[in-house]
Length: 304
Image 1 (spheres, rainbow, N blue to C red):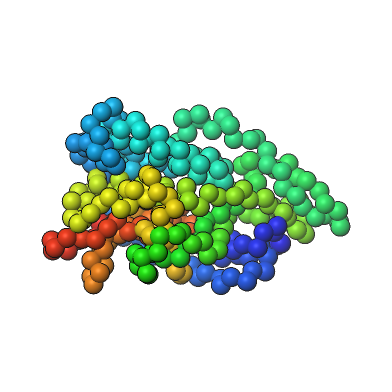
Image 2 (cartoon, rainbow, N blue to C red):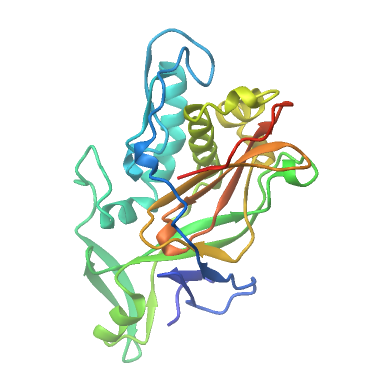
């Protein structure tokens, strides 16, 4: 199978290459889900003030994981109107971009009931030496979702603040590209992949990690929690200091939609979160550094 982009394609935890790529092929391993708790059962205490800026005015509930990704856990009175507009802007850039079709396929919540999702998707194919465009039904079409792979957070390296994109790994959802091509008698498929706003994606990951740490009452353990908030809300050019990607092998968690954990480093005393969206597909795991811990004794790892 040959695609229009030199990207790595993951489907059901297996890596397939649509075309030759110069980047290293990631490995995907099966992970154990027995010790992972049910994130939906987390009960967060109402916030005393906006968790981002401390405002007491005009606050509304804040979803930890975006509602459009199936997030149901909220922090009551967690975000003021000003901060809500900021987080809504970068979340929308991600959720209504290339991720929109995957959300539809997985029947994720949608306030518009997915009315804006097209009924057919054009797939360019090569058949009998000719280029043919197949108008594939949205429930049958191969859908590719790009995941940016970043260098580790600057806090793990040399405290650099710039977000550094290394490559793109593409998850395969919807119809199987190989079966689709065979069914339509095509030797090659060209599946167009919309661009992903890497900065917006990193900011969304930071917001998930920060809100989850607040709900688990872990932010109080930090010497200073303002660094990540500033990068996320006001200074996105510095988000690379806090957000990065774990190296392969990528881990596949059967039956688990998304994975969020809280952990800490022993020597450098950093509190960080691991976030994996669509974990059952063996997608990349991202790291969000929340800050440096104070001198309290280590707590048990929280994972959901």
